[in-house]
Image (cartoon, rainbow, N blue to C red; front, side, top):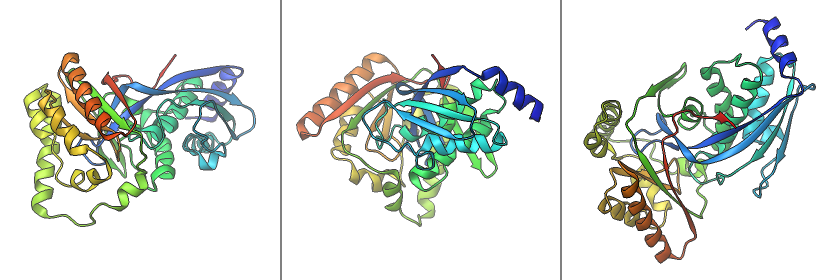
Length: 319
């Protein structure tokens, strides 16, 4: 990327703005802690980015969540500040954020903000950065949100579809082909902070459990690539994370049990929770799973939202 290219891209983008849909994501996909993620068609955030002459980030929120407008304390802000640094401080950005993915939902709210911001800015600049660069920038937002750089939300948000993060040092993201899948989610209206959900995880694991988990991850990726629904179903098992984190989510065991009875291939905690996701082959089954989830949470008295959606193959896209 030469200086002339940067200057030309900035000049061409003056007085223009771009609005994008930044998708929610399901991280981990049950057995793939920190290495597997999937983009969703619903829910999503809406973000508008435009260039400004001063090398700063200006954040405007048009939702009810009251998130910080200080760019150093906002996930979209820190991602865009990194882009400004890579652009040698030749421009800045104003970003307007309408969050439709509730923070703390476990559906990649922070990733949608950080990834959506850098993808929109990059489009304005004639895509001078590659996807890997954008993931690295967006991971700074994830570090702000959770204390840890991880890419299993931002990578599918940017690349679309299902992604495997083989490594983050150096970054190595692999897009994984997958068959048609329906995704049913229930979001109980409680908050599970990602940082807190990481703190309760075991620091040491048994070798036999690690071997079982590795087998499930490898088989899940194989099942997705082959379009083998039965193999996908058998592989959606987590022996390391779910047994610990599920205690933070009311009615988790009942939701999972009833979803499987309704025909789900399998599923589990979305990201760090509290949302729960289930995969199925067709919309009819996905709706039956939604009904089971709704009945379960209605009985608890806990407010909730549900979504029935599909895999987003494009990632962040402009409106």
